[in-house]
Length: 340
Image 1 (cartoon, rainbow, N blue to C red):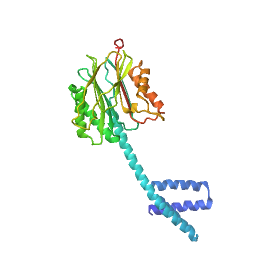
Image 2: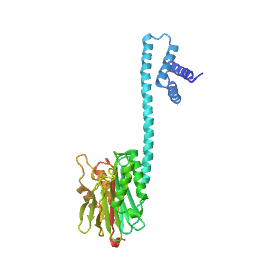
Image 3: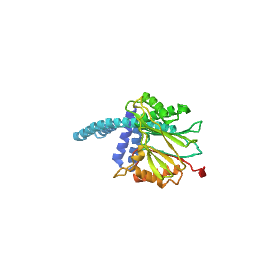
Image 4: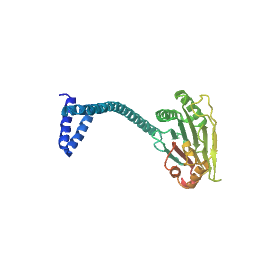
């Protein structure tokens, strides 16, 4: 006896028992039968067909209209079964895509620094939070053999797996550069050539890169179309915009990048951020840049890591915990001598 005949016989016995006794045991048996047909991958239309055949066998004299109604139901279930199978195929494909995205997200996480270099002269705080599983933000902090500190923040214009692949290329390119190319202008030009040759024409990368020299206390920086940061002067108690004009990476291989510099006094700090920080918004309006600097000022007596954590917490609350874009905030502060 094949599977179909076995199921038909079982269904006949269960249905007959229910029609004769109408007890709880028959209903329980029906539930167990449902599990069985799921295991055997029996389609809904096949179940209706079995039901019709059993009814015809048990009650050969049923009215023609009743029999025709079952045949009508059978046609309905055939359409339902086809739609259901298509739905299951789409669900399986979606699960496969979600698994791929999880792998890419995990890969992205490994591309970010596992720890911030310990620098005697500097206090460095970083927070990065993706708006979804995949992030378009990237940051990099490195200390070279000569003691120079390099800090980068980038925003990859693109999402999902392509952004993760682009991020891995940026990290590899930066890790492969010799220590002599830690100066911003030269580094951005080198990165631009690599990115322009290896990413799709519709993608590009914005970046701000800075290099701190602990001997001269000068912070050199350059930008490639990235969101302007801030410079805070402890002596003047004032924020200034840290702006560095430059073409985004990956648009033109001939692009050149200017280098700027600021001498950092004790207590001064640099703020680098992604547009997910400056484009935070409530239901009514965008949050102004002055509000962001006001938040930083509110917490500036704390360590830089506590500053960035508190600023994120406040901005998240203002947005009712709905992060609309990837959020990355970096603060690099020259320590006071007494805190060394």
